[in-house]
Amino acid sequence: GRVERGIANLETKEVSSLCVEPHPDGTFLVAAFDLPADELPAFHAREEEFFIVEAPIQELDGRVEQRGLLCCASTDEEYLARWGREVFDQRYTSHGLNTVWNWSGTILPCRVYLRHCILAASKPGNDVKQDFLDNTFLWDRETTIGEHIAANPSIMEDLPPESLRARYSG
Figure 1 (cartoon, rainbow, N blue to C red):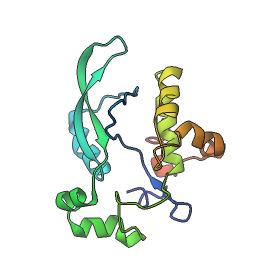
Figure 2: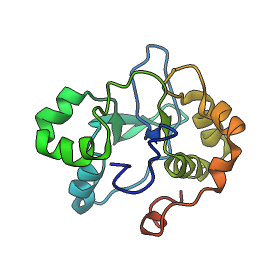
Figure 3: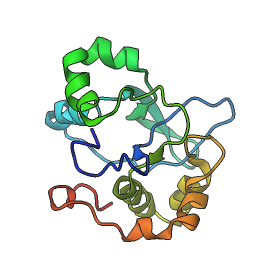
C-alpha cells in the first residue's frame, strides 16, 4: 500500500487513498482513462485494498457507451479473504497499521496521492476538477476535498517520490 510506496505519513494520519461509496443521491464526474488489458493484473495488484467493480460511464449528455472500473470501499474481512493474513501483515501490520477499512477517527488522504487525484481531475476541464473538489469527502463524510485543500494548500506543492513521479503526476 501507500506506506510501502513511501507516501503515507502515520504521524499525521495521512495514510488513505480515495474510493467510491454508494450514496442514494450521489453522482460525480470522473476522469476516465484507458487501461490496456495486459495491465489489468498490475492494476488489481496495485489497488489491492479496494473492491473493484465494473460500472457504466454516463457521458454528460446522458449517453452510456462504455463501462469502466471503479475502486470501491471494501472491508478488512474481504481483503483477508482475497489476499490472506500473510499479505495483510506484510503490507499493513508490519508498518503499524492493524486495519485498512475499520478506522476509528481521523484518517486523511496521502498528500501526494491527493495531489495526483486533483491533477488528474483537472485534465478533462474545470467542471470535472470542481466536481471532484465539491463531491469528494474526507473520512467524516462532511469535509470536502476542496475545503481540505483550502485549509492545506501546500498539498499541491508536495511532489511524489522519484519512483512514483510518472504515475502520480496527474
